[in-house]
Length: 267
Image (cartoon, rainbow, N blue to C red; front, side, top):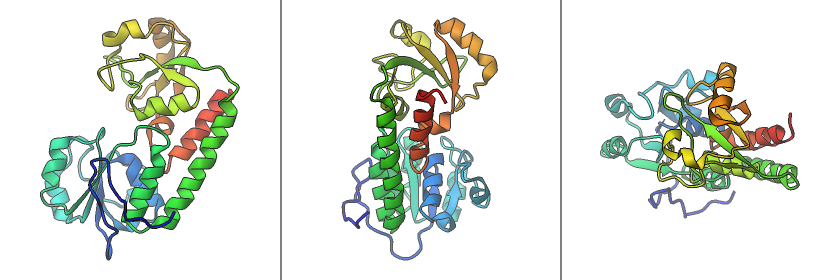
C-alpha cells in the first residue's frame, strides 16, 4: 500500500504520518485489534474495557473506561498523542472533551465491508505501517472475492438480525452489520428505519416475511436457549451467529467474510 498524503478520517480531518513513537489510546474494540495487527501494540497506552482481542496482548494495556464512558482523567494521565474512536461506538461529547488535550483524534465510521480498505490505508498511513496495511488489504480482497464466488448462484434471502433482548432490537440497512450480511446474500429487515438500531416493536410491520432469524452473540449474549423463543416470536427459523465476525471491522473483516461464506455453504 503506497504512502499517501490523503489521510482524511471520517470527519474529513487531514492527518499526517507520525514522527517518532506515537502514544495511542483506542476506544474501539475492533480497532484496538487492528492496531495490534499493524504492529502497534507497544504504542498502545490505553484501551476500553471492551477491547479484548488479541487477549494476551491487550491484557498488558491499561483499561481506560468503556466505549461510552471513557475515563477522561486516566486518558489525560496517559498523555496520548493519538486517540482512535468511532462514530457509532463512542459518545461525541466525550470525544470532544478528549480532543481538548489529545493532539490527534482519528475518527472512523466504516459502513460497508469495502470501507475496510480505506481504514487500513488511513491507520497504516498515519502510523507508518503501510506494508502491514497492504497485507491486510490483500487478504481482505481475497476473502471478499471468495464470498462473491460462493454466493453468486445462491438465492438471496431476508433475515432479521437481533442484537438485544428486552427490548428486542435489530439493525437498519445503513449499518456495517447489514452491509456485511448483504455481501453474503442476506438482506436485513426492516427495509427502512429512521433509527440505526431500532426496537423491533417500532418497526414490526417491516419484519414480516423474514426467511430466518439470526441471534448475534454480541452485544447481547444470545445462546441456544433463546432460539425457540425468537423463532416463535418472529415466525421464522432461528440460528445463532457470531457477532464479532459480522460487526468487527478492521483486521477481523477478512475472517468475517470467510465465516459468512461457510455459513452460506451450510458449514
